[in-house]
Structures are given as C-alpha cells and as structure tokens.
Length: 581
View 1 (cartoon, rainbow, N blue to C red):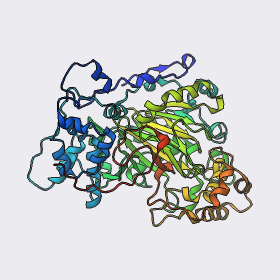
View 2 (view 1 turned 180 degrees about the horizontal axis):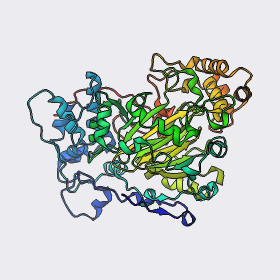
View 3 (view 1 turned 180 degrees about the vertical axis):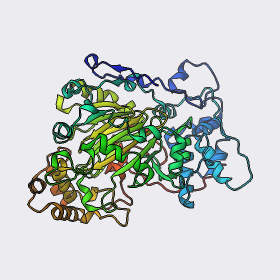
View 4 (view 1 turned 30 degrees about the vertical axis):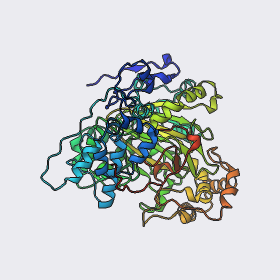
C-alpha cells in the first residue's frame, strides 16, 4: 500500500516555482544538439558550420526555414536526405516531420494505428506502415549523438518537449475547509469530499463561479481501481478505436487503446504530444460508462445530472442540456488519455458551460485565470472567435512563466491566477468562462471530464447560444445533433415544455440572457459587432472541447519562433516529393 505524504495546510508557502526550475531537462537532446553559445567554449573543429562546404551552405538558411522545407518532403525524400549530411540527419529526424507523414497516410487510407505498427518513434511507425503486409523486418531507429552540433532553435524545440516538472507540482496537500486560505497562496481551494455537500458546492463554488478541488471524491470509483490495469482497459475497449490530436498536428489520428499506450511510452515525443480526447468512449450503458457513473451519483450528488438536493420541489436536473436528449445535445462527456508533458493549452470551455474533471490515473497540474483576465501570451480576438497563442505547453512555460509569476505576485487579488495539482481520485470543478491550462505529469494519465449547464450559468449559456452562434461547438459534425443556428430556440423551448414557461428560475435566466453577461469572460460591447457581421466563414470541422478556433505562432510543419505578436495561420498541404541532388 502506497503511503501518501501530505503537506500541512497551515505550513503551505505561496506557490513560487521559478522559471529556471524548468530548464533542467528530463533528458538530453537525443541527437546531441547544444545551444549555440556552447560553440564559443568548444575548441572542436567538427562543428556543423566549419570545414565542410555543404554544412556552410546549409547554414545560409535559418533552422526554422529548413524545417519548413523538410515538412514538404515525402517519406522517400526525407529518408534519403537524412543520409546526406550531419545537419540533415539531425533536422530530418524531428519527430513532428515523421508524425505528419504517418497522419497523412492514415487519412488517405482511412485506417488507424494498431500496436503492431507503433514503434519507439514516428519514423519506425512510418516504415512499418510502408511494409505492412510484407515479410520485411525493419531495424528500429536509434538516434546517433552528433558532436559539435549547435542550434538554438533545435535545442529549444527539445526543451519544450522535455522541460523539467518541478517537484512542488507533485506534492499532495491535505484538504482544508477554508477557501480563503488557499486563494491567498495562489492555489485553488482543496476541500475534502467528505465535507462537500450539495448546498456547499452550489452556494460557495458553482454560483460564485469559483474553481475547487474536491479531494478524494472519485477515490472509491470502480474506474479508479480498474483503469490502472492496461489489460482491463484493452478488454473493455476491444474492437474500437479512439481519436487523438494536438494543436500542432495537421490531422487527428485514430488509435487502438494499446497502440496509444505504446505511443505514450515512446522515449521521444513531439513538442505538443497527441492527446486522446474521445467523446464516444463513455456513452451511456457502455462498459466504461458503468465504471464511473453509478459511483458519481453516490459520491458527488451535486454533479449528478439527475435532480439536485436543492431542487427536489420541481425536479430540475443539474445538467439542463439533458432536456434535448442524448445525441441531440452538444458533446458533453470525454475519456482523456495522455502521456507526460501532454495536455491542453489555455482555453475556455465551450458554449459557456461548467465542467468537472476527475483524475483517474496520473497527476495533472491546472493553471486558472479568472474571466476577463487573459493569460500572458494569449491573444483572443475582440469577439473571442479566434485566439493567437503558443503552440505547446512547453513553449508557453519557457516564454511566459516569468510574466505569470509576476501576475501571481502583483496583480489585484481578484485578478491573480490560481494553480493546483489533481491527484488520482480528485475531482476539479472548472467554472464557465475561466481560462485554464492542464499539464499531465505522469507517463500515463487518464481522466473523465463532463461539461454541463445548471441554473447558475443558464442565463449566460442562453446568451452565448444566441449571440455567439459561430463559436458553438460539439454539434457540427454529427447528423443527429441540433445545429448551432437552431440550438438556442430548441433548447429554450424544451426547457419551457418540461418546467413551464413561468418557472421563476427560467424567467430570470431569460431576462438576464436578454440584457447582459454575468461572467466577465464575454463583453456586451462585442455583441453588436458580432451581430453586424454580414458573412463569416464557418470552420471546416468542429472546434472540439476548447470551443475556440486557434491561430498559433507556428508554421504548418515546424515551429521554432515564439513571437506570438506575429502569429499567422498557415494552411497545411499534403506532402509532395522534393528531390535533393
């Protein structure tokens, strides 16, 4: 039995992780790349820029330019190119290049990744796909360390992949029933599940729109016991695949569960690793759904979609979207699986919904910013329809952590960010309108998340459905779902039919929706501008759980610049043959 050591609440210091703590990388660069400053103290004459005309020619272009060019190579050209010189051997083995080749091939063949195809790298995976069905044995790729190779851009890419996880993030704090104690130290309140009642949750957290960690709320769930066993998970999901993607990937990919588990164990992941975020795995009456839902009703009645204890008089369900029926409502429940350093970059949850997130396996670091307080490095458009932001979690940390610390220290108390670590069995309440980032800390991290609407955010949600139609997500790509242009009217009509047009809480929500926002994540001044737009181009596919479209500071194929002020959107094209003679 594992002994958990808690920090005493009365001795907690204000969370103060410093920027330099991330710089002790968890692994050296696999190809031996060092920052360019090291060349000044290295007397070697075998650097990539000396004594070799080909190397000197290569160095006439920036690394980011070469990575962009390499992104247009097909697999044959890239395989030949990495044999041509030291520079292309290193640059041509960036995992993002081979990942994109695999994703394009899977998309073209309408196939998925299985365990027999996954290897220790994306290059291995690409080669196995080429040889699939053939009696050929491929030798796994093993990186060679190249001495005297200096590149700030390539080293920074690896730093964003392998930044050190601070020990302070791994500590587990004992719960304390005093929210002010936590927020004064820059931490999300951590309340013991045994002391959290429905009335306390609604009046102290949901209605005031404040995040909270409900300590140990899911510890007794069947999922927390059984999902730790990979074999159990494979048996329960046999015959189906899961969708995974990231903000840097040109396309999503479908994995079998054991293939994705194999991917998470790869020694060299991308800067922004793929993240399994599947909306179908926890459908009602599925084996995995039955592993958590009955326990949720038992341990967290305030999160149960069934009537809450405060609403027994009129039997108002806590998740009001239920009135639309399963399948017609926007996506709401996801199974989440990711490896270390994966996670979600800053976003606001979709459709003005609240959410809860239960950590089943592995630990997660959460960073919250209050509504209307935009995190450093995040640049939303005036109407919130697009966001310019760093591509990856590592890029944001290495570029903006010092700004984040400055805000924690000097911003007015109600504008300061909050942080917490969710340990297995903890449930985090995510209020609507809050910016948040989530970082997975362990090699395997599994969670369940659910988005919902209750009385506390109904007015803002109705206003969002009416005023922000183009930002509605979770219902565009399913034939049976109610489409964004109809969702407001259909939802409101369903509420009135079930609860009556004169229900006081419903009348109050309608009046508020007609007049103003109560959450500062959205501004009344933006609404008129949004309504006056004559024609807006809709996204080609659903925006997913973040609820916003993103414009990042990266090229379609490679990212080395962190200057988000010059963010651009670049179309991602299929690779073509690019011959080097």
